[in-house]
Image (cartoon, rainbow, N blue to C red; front, top):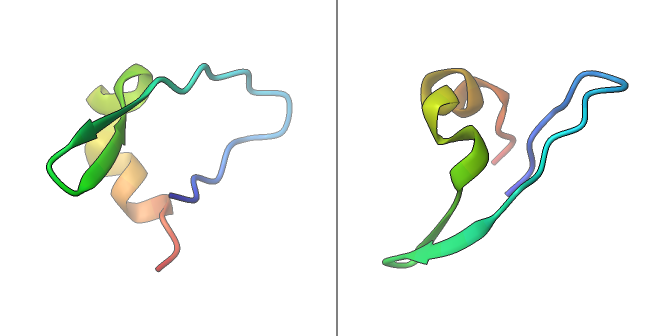
Amino acid sequence: MLAKLKEGQNVKFDFVQEGDDYVATEVKYQRGMQANSLEP
């Protein structure tokens, strides 16, 4: 999972396994925004 973060932004990623996918619980609420930031 690659997430683009703004410079200086401190985010704690707690990765948990959900099926075959990993989600960052700390940014789960940003799912829509995050999906646009992910690089395939």
